[in-house]
Image 1 (tube, rainbow, N blue to C red):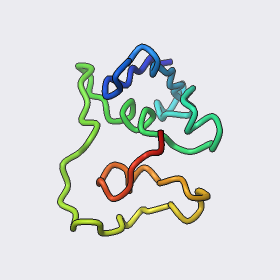
Image 2 (cartoon, rainbow, N blue to C red):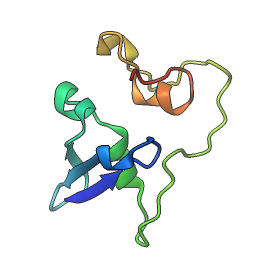
Image 3 (cartoon, rainbow, N blue to C red):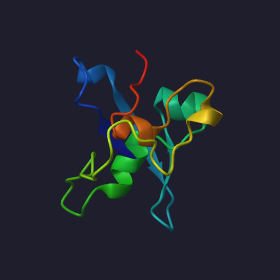
Image 4 (cartoon, rainbow, N blue to C red):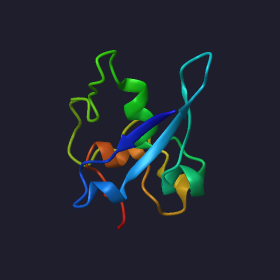
Length: 98
C-alpha cells in the first residue's frame, strides 16, 4: 500500500489516497479516490505510483507532444458517461469536474 497526496489542490490534506499494489507484479490494483471507487477506473494516483522511480520521484505529467485539442489515441471518454478520461485530462483536452 502506498499513500498518495495530491498536492495540486488548495487543501492537499483533503486529497490523500491509498493505492494498493499487487504483491507479485507490483502493479497498481486499487485506489481509495472517488474516481476509482465509483467507476472502477484506473486513476491518476495509480498511474503516478506505477511511474514512481526507486528514489520516490515521479513524472506525473510526462512530456509528450500533442496537437491542441486532439483526441489522444487511448481516449476512453465515450464509455464514462460524460466524465473525461485520464488521457484527455492529462493532455489538457478536457478538465475534471469539481
